[in-house]
Length: 149
Image (cartoon, rainbow, N blue to C red; front, side, top):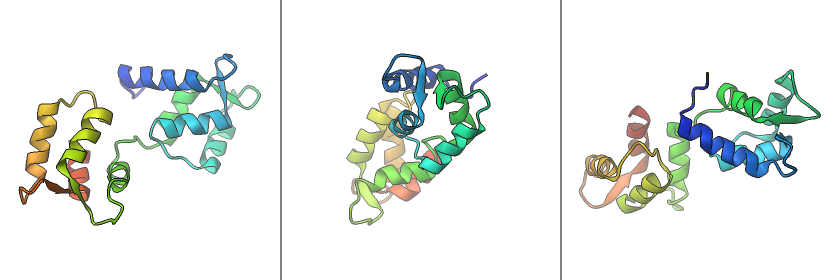
C-alpha cells in the first residue's frame, strides 16, 4: 500500500504518463529525472541511476508506474520537507535576506501547497508568522512551522 494520498497518486500518474513519450507504460532514466523534478523532487542523476539499478524487474532500462511509485516512496524525500520549503522561498529572496512578503507566501501556498489547507488557514498561519505585523515574514522560521503541521 502506498504512503501517498489518492490525490498525490493521481498527480504522480498524470506526470508519469506525460513523460511516457511512446505510450508504452514505461519511462526511461531521462524521462524519470524530468518527472521527479516536475513533481518537486530533486534527485541527482547518480541517485536516479542507482534507483534504476536497484529495481530487479527493470525492462530494458525503463520503469512502469508501480516501480516509479516504489522509487518515490523508497528513495526520495517528500517535497514538503522544511529544507525544500526553504529552497522554494529562497527563489523569491534573491538577496538571501531571510524575509519575503506575506502576500508572496500566501500565493505560493494557495497555488502550489497542500490542497487540504484552505485560504483561511493560510491567513491564520501568516498572521502568526508576521511577528512584527509589517507584512514581511522570516521564511526560515515559517518553513519550520509548516514542517511541524
